[in-house]
Length: 310
Image (tube, rainbow, N blue to C red; front, side, top):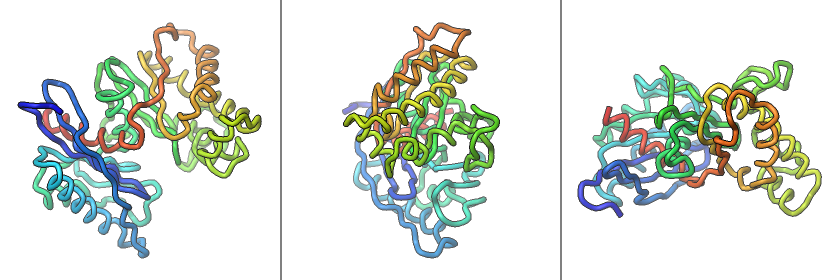
């Protein structure tokens, strides 16, 4: 526990199934996690009512977390999609019903709780958490991928996550690795996500879910192992592109599929070695994320603290 001049910050991670929260403390440039918890996301039957209902729940959860853990200075909210950082409104959220275009989020939560509130993409929040408290600690430049329903991405330069002018920088899952490849949910063809999202992993491994694919591969199932190797190859192509462009010191891979370990990481490394020709790959560490399911909420809290300090 940090003593003395520590400040506390709240992060909320909005998912289609659960709404997670984390309180972090900061002192002298160091971060610790004070508390974490989650509640089911309040998705009502009427899609049109979902956005307002969920925003109200975000405010309720924020107030309850602060009441439990003590005063906080800022609130960060990780959202699964696109948002407008200037207005604190959402543009499009993946896997949540209703029309989220122009939905006020940061403003209503800030008004209800009385604290500065900032939005961040959930993948960027994951990356920031790993950069400050997890597997990216000490890295100057970092590329992060989180593998789940989609492929979330993030990159950090000189110790800071780069978001771009509109918060969308780092969409590694939506860069093209095959111009004639399968359609992606974003509307483009051949995105990395079109090869490495959860349903594609399950299909490649002959299982119902990506989690089952990992378990089957670890148990020795040859089809599952071959499927993970194929997915690893595509991930390796995408990561090799990022290494060539950014030359990071560290690559952090998170999400449930990262539990496959070397069954996934070995083909990624092989593809990186095959394709990167402009920098020394011996100086690029490929590591598994450390913070698990709480990374999004932790990163949202860190994001808010750092935004408020600028």
